[in-house]
Length: 74
Length: 519
Image (cartoon, rainbow over the protein chains, first blue to last red):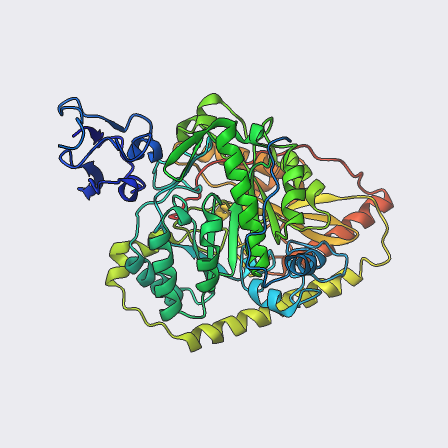
């Protein structure tokens, strides 16, 4: 419920897709998107959100202001 | 040079790494080898002093053998878009179709599309002998796609050599898989062995779910690269080391890199000029970091060329390039076109064509040897460069005005030695019009005494002469090296008789633009 990929910035390199511990990332219309229902901001998995850490373009995987922050497993 | 920790062998112990390194060190790599008369894989058509198994691997590989690159073609398939490190000379967002440099492609391919493309190209270009995966990201950051592609191709086109190019970060994890797929050529890009220098080139690396920055990241990278190199050497896989020469950052340091990779059994070292322009949007492009001049590049290559030969014929091609190294035919093989193509992969036709190429190759070397003997009595300290317009096959067979690049040979009493090439094609965004093109060419070959062409018009002829570069068209469609040696002999005669005075030429510019395929 938290990160999103800025479509205009995405190079569609696919680096983020296999890194996501929640399989929340998939390709859609030539760029990659994050399923907000699956995203946990990597909390409990890794120190740093994996999509942010591996993305070659800064400010592309960002907190989605339209979504509530992840509150931990329900 | 702190921070360089001892790397461990990492092998099963079944192979004696020292023995293999010794064997590889003894044969001295595979670049060009002047006219010393001593054959190496880079110069003669023969096996020379190379062990048979190594000769078999390099003789038709245009990147590993300078001599082969006049005759054989390669292709890259862009199946590996993801990368796990960031380099200051790379920008993954830039994708102008006419831009030509590593990391740039027009379209990504699936392994299945790539396999189809390889068959289509192999059927159309019978001298295509090598399939490489070079990105546009890092092949080993996309291991599933990379190895699936190799698997498909090794089944359908078993005669094609497999090759990959990596930054080395995850190389140690994949060496056994590389060996299992019979990938017998691996290129590692190594720009430093000192993490402090590395921190100026690599902002970060991503490894084991973590982003490492600065010196920490660069240290991890260099340790993994050198370990991977040793593991490949232990398995008898040939390695080429690519290094980007960045003046003021790693230019002097590359001599250390050369020593480090040589001692770990690398086969060939390829020092390439930095490609850097603001319009590429790379960190180095935006900070105004310049690339080296032709003289600076050659001086560094010369200083590293001792025990180990240097690659000087690299065209820094795209991750989807197709054709001879100086050309790019990728536009003929877009996904739409290959899917519509009738592919008839006939291994016998390919063999027959390649046998004819071998004959041509042997004739070329014989001609060179014969001409070289005529230089036997000469003694002179004069060394000079010439530029050659060629379409391939080792012949002077391109018109001056059609040339997209010139090949550069160094002439001395020991013969003709290939030392590089200069691109002179027009860059898509550079704004060079017809008016400027001759001026651009003169800048690119300004360090040459003569330019050998199949044909040249009156206007450029007089402009070149005015610039001190002699246009030579009397050897049209003849072998490059033989003609160059004959011309050089006549040049020495004229100097000796006092008819002309030998002048030293100035420096030349390395063009940074695109290799436009649709010329």
